Picture (cartoon, helix red, strand yellow):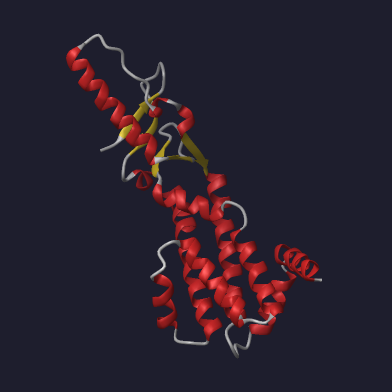
Length: 230
C-alpha cells in the first residue's frame, strides 16, 4: 500500500510514500539510520553507566532498568542512582554532561524518524519526506466516509484530507540529514566519554573527566551548578 500525491497541473508525482520508500533513496537513508541507531547506542550507554555507579553486574542493573518502559522514567532512575552514589562534583559532571547530550530536539527527531512515515520527492534525488502517521489515518478515514456518502449521493462533494496539504510533509534535504547524523554522533561521543569516565579504575577515567569538563557545552553548565550551590 502506498500513496502518491500528484503535482497540480502536472503528470509528475510530487510525493511518494510506501513502506520501502527509504530503499528508493539509499544515499539519504543512511543518514536516517545513523540518527536512529546512534540514539539507541546512547540509551544503552546510559544503562551501562548506571552499572558503573552501582559497581555491580551489568545484567542485574540492565534487567532492573529495562523493566521501566517509559524512557523519561528510566533516565530519572539512572540520575537518581547517580545522585545517591557519586560525590557532589562527580554528580555535577554527570548532570552537566547528560544535559549537553540531551539538549535541543535531538531525541525528539530520533523518535519522529522511528515512528513516522517516510517518503520522497519524486522530482528530487536529494530530498526525503516525513509524514505524521495521524495525517495518513485521518485521510484514510475521511476518504472512506466520502465513499460511503457518495454511494447515497453521487454528486456529494469530496472532503479535503490532510494529505492534500503540502504543509503536512516535512522535507529533509541531504545537507540537513548529514547535519542531524553528525549531531547524533557527537552526542554519542559525549555519552561514551561519560561512560568510560566513571568506570572504576579505568586508565583513561581521569583524562576523560578532564575532557568532559573542558567541553564548552558542559563547562558552562558546571559553572551554573556551582554558582547555584554557593
